[in-house]
Image (cartoon, rainbow, N blue to C red):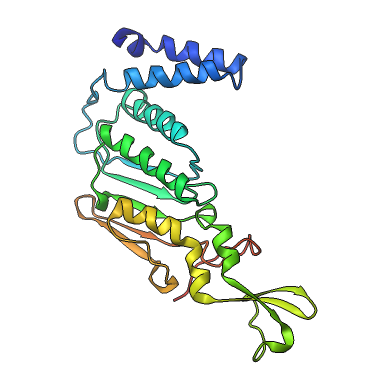
Length: 240
């Protein structure tokens, strides 16, 4: 098995077979079992890079299932070890769209992805940077952030961007406290990884992560803070 992994011929065989038989569940299962079987049989090789800094940046994972999380984390660990010959990671950046529909089940799978990866590449919570993307807000929770009202019953003039017009006489008005909850599932995932919840207050969502050993500061911003199920393209950076 070690020789086969080192030479890479089994991986190439699996890849070619899956290309000619896309979606074949048997090949997918075999590939996953091969990854699981070989993930712990080879030590990380040290290419002698000295004090090189290794920062892994992942984006748009769109993780949905535990099976997907296991397959991807095993393949990623092998690519880092054998293809790139990276012995360790100094930091991990997850820059949005970790989940696909921002459900608790998807974030459980995403946590499994990170737990699996950290078995091969240990990282303390302070070495992980996480920011949300537009798929990290939950549309069902966003809908609950709006209250249906007759326009004549609204006190004052509706604020642009804070309501949805259902008809000339009926609007949906945002309840700001409920509206912020559309990031609640992401916040819980963030807490599971970082040890503290992601702030739902927009003024607190500019987060700086400091890596003193690398003399590095990373500023994470939420560009999806104004997005919801209705306003899907209103990406921006909060000025507060």
